[in-house]
Length: 238
Image 1 (tube, rainbow, N blue to C red):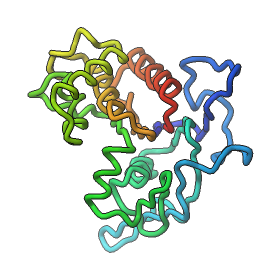
Image 2: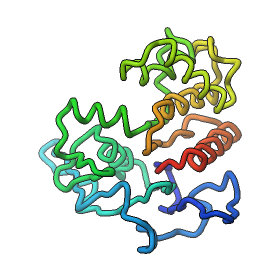
Image 3: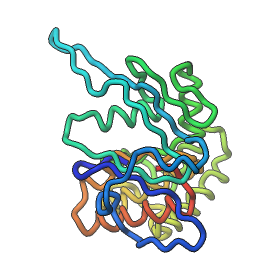
Image 4: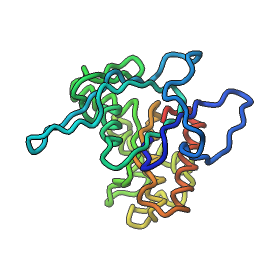
């Protein structure tokens, strides 16, 4: 999860009997090591010697160089830094939306660098959920229809896709907004719909790029608490 300030922390999934405070922001605890203890299983998501460079105006811009880290299934990780540090670019690489200059990303048993464009699209639809700073809802469709889009892209029947969409609207506490279009929803409601859309395919990996950046503090806190709750109940790697 990309945030705009603070320090990088990890939040492994709690073991039975562990009590953790709900709604605690990743940056609010003491900074932890990026790689979890060796006693855990092999990382579900792994970056190895990841480098990303751009050439612009005859000059080379290097965002990061030989970056390596791992994230275990069920972990919640915050990536924080100044604007332009490469947070969004890193999320694009982790989600197979872009290719690194060198290095590779491994997600489960999949090597992202070797995917064709069709394979990458299939991987994203099956394995990854995205929540961006802006919701990107389609204005001509209802909240339920927007959430159903990833399932329709899979070839699911419309009736079944809308049924799943309504279940997720209930989970994000927006059941009564199913037939409302995006222009009829508040900013916080729009972002909740985008969260439901990201999770309706039941992905194992959720990438969130400053998902509360356009919201007021109270609404941002509410959306973040929802994300953290869903992270735990769905055992997402986030």
